[in-house]
Image 1 (tube, rainbow, N blue to C red):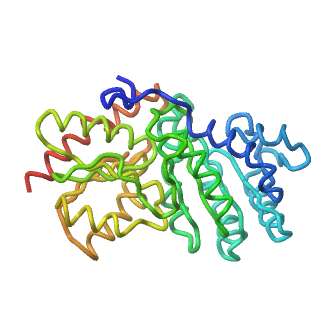
Image 2: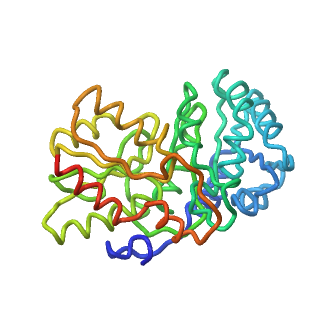
Length: 319
């Protein structure tokens, strides 16, 4: 079953496609924007912008560390560099350069990690960015965004360009269900409630929002009304929404396409432990690397499914 099908959602575009289209559309409005690409612009979709604005697109080749250094220099000269590569190549290969050339001096650089998570599929573990959110969140001053569908990815692209300071935007390869419309709100640091409910709260981001809605639909058939929060901004986190959910529903399940450590679950748990302790469960990749395979098959194998979320809800409600 496709993601979002149980919730009655229509399949839309991938977030990487929405990002590329939005960046091109915003090119005239943001004349200081330039792209810096690591020879994968056809995959990350920065080539859409570069073809429309050929004097503002720079391909430095397969050299991610150098790519980040170039971006830092462009930012120092007053440009707004949008640096894009596969999430694993960008955050893992060039972490030291991101730390010293962007985070430490607080440069206005926008990092876009495409092909994130295990849903990249057949390309295998070497190209699966599953630590990227944790790495980005660990750096002071960084804003970290993980949109759930194409419409929110378009809104996130504008938001990151308007924001002054370093941003990491995580995008994916596969097509995702349409959760939002062009008129839906998107504010950095403000979670969206995509389904109301008072029995338990499911907090998710990225492709796991559609899967969480599938889980909520299954739970509703058993009389359990689950609230679903799209926590698209991992940093800064919407603490008020988390506290409200903990207070009103008393139980929280966090679902993300990321390692167990350092991602959305860790961030939410920190807030809950500090402000309103309630029973929690977590649905994520765990503490392992995945493998090559069909994207939906990998999600099934590693427990990133509606069934896994339902099981987590059942477990957390038993406490």
